[in-house]
Length: 395
Ligand code: SAH
Image (tube, rainbow, N blue to C red; front, side):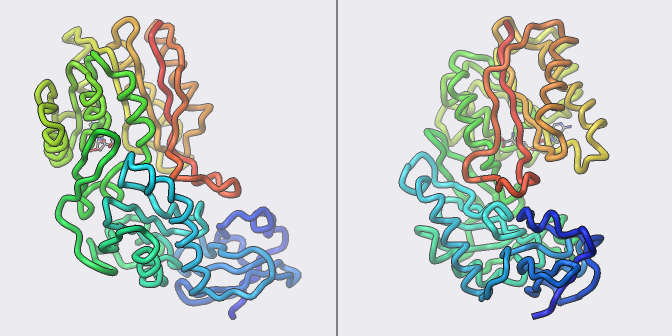
C-alpha cells in the first residue's frame, strides 16, 4: 500500500479522528484517484488509512484510524449495511418512505450521499473514494435497503469537478430505472420527487422535522412560504388546516411541481397561490400593499458558500428576516432557516435578534430546529452540521 507522510505537527486533526487531510498538510506521497493509502506522521507512525484524491484540496479522506489491516471491499459493504441499519426505525415507523440512508463522512463513507425515495435509491458521489467504489456501494444499498428497486446516481454535482470527477447528468448504477416522478409519503402528505433534475437528489429530506413543526402550528393560519421549492412547508401547512397558503419561488419548474404536490392532497391546491418571484422583491411588495400573514417560512438557498462570504450572507438573512417580521400579524409566527454551514448558530441568532429589534417587535424563540436524525453529524466532523432553524412568535 502506498504511503502518505504528513508534515511535522500536521497530524493533530487526524489524531482527533477528523476525516480530512488537506493538501497543505502532506509532506510526500502520491496515489491514484480513490486509492487506499496508509497515512503516517512525520516520524513514521501509522495514523490510519484513507482514500487519496489527487485533484482535491482535501487530499486524503480518512477511512480507518489506527494501525490495523484494512480490506476495503468488506469495509465499504459493512459500512453501507450499518448506515442503513441505523435508519431501521424509519422503515418500520410508517411515517415516511423517504429517508437519507447514507450521510457521507458522518456515516464513515466520505463523499457518499444516498437518499431513498419509496424504493428508489439516488446517490451523489462527491469524493474520489465514493466514485471509485460506486458499484460496490450500489450493490450493498440494493441488498441492504428494504424493497430497493434500483440505485441511480446524480452526476451533476458541482463538487465532482473539484474532485476531478466526471460531471454529467444521471445514470443507473444497479437495478431498474426510476420513474420520471417518484411519489413519496411524509405524514399525511404526499410529494412528487424529480430525482433527475430536482435539487440535491430531488427533495429536502433534511427539513422533515421542521415541516411537521410548521404543520402543527398552521391550523387556521394564512401562511407565506418563501423559497418554497416544490412546496414542502406550504403543503404541510395546508394539510394541517391552514386557511390560505402562498408559495413563492423564483423557479417556475419548482412551482409547477409544488402545484402537483398540492393537487395530490385533493382540494389542497384551492386556497394556495403560486407566485413566481424573487422573494426579496416579493416581501417588499407585500409591505407596500400592507399584506400581513399569520405564519411565514423563510428557507432560502445557501447564501454563504464559505467563511469569506459570511458577512455578506448575514446581510441577506437580515434583510429577509426584517421584511418578513414586519409582515407578521400580532401573535404571528416565523420559521427561519440558514443552510449555510459557514453561518454559526450564534451569528444566525444574532441576525434574527437584530432583525426583530429593527422591526420593533418582541420576538420569542420557540423552536431550535436542524437537520433530521437521518442526517447525523459525527462529533469528530463538525462540518457535517449545516442546517439551522429558529421559529418564534411575535408577542
Ligand atoms: N423550502 C424548500 C427548499 C428551499 S431550496 C423545501 O423545504 O423543500 C431554495 C429555493 O429557493 C429553491 O427552490 C430556489 O429556486 C429558490 N430561490 C433561490 N433564490 C431565490 C430568490 N431570490 N427568490 C425566490 N426563490 C429563490
